[in-house]
Image 1 (cartoon, rainbow, N blue to C red):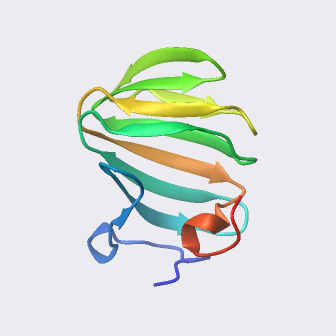
Image 2: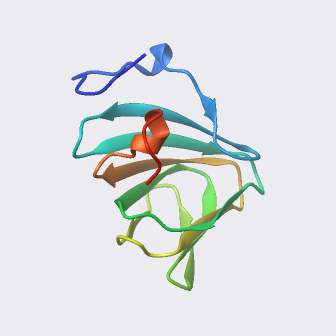
Image 3: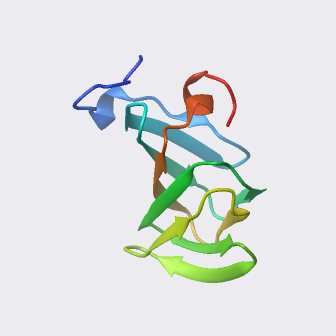
Length: 117
């Protein structure tokens, strides 16, 4: 289902897709300028260090994560958030099973079958 420019997205209608070992994601709503994604991690799952041109804001919805951004690591819990500047190397380790809600600007075309970022 293509949700680009869709005003509402209902969680019960969205499918999880694999996003790495012990990680899955749901692309929620987006347009060309912004995208929201829910990412679920099993305990111990590793979001490997990487970078992309997008600015990313993320909220810890559930769980505990060690988040590394540009060489600095902090432990974040439910309700905590973080900002990843464009092209900053970052990654996550799920200390406990949990969920991140990620917001990207501009949207991640690579998450919906477009060209990689």
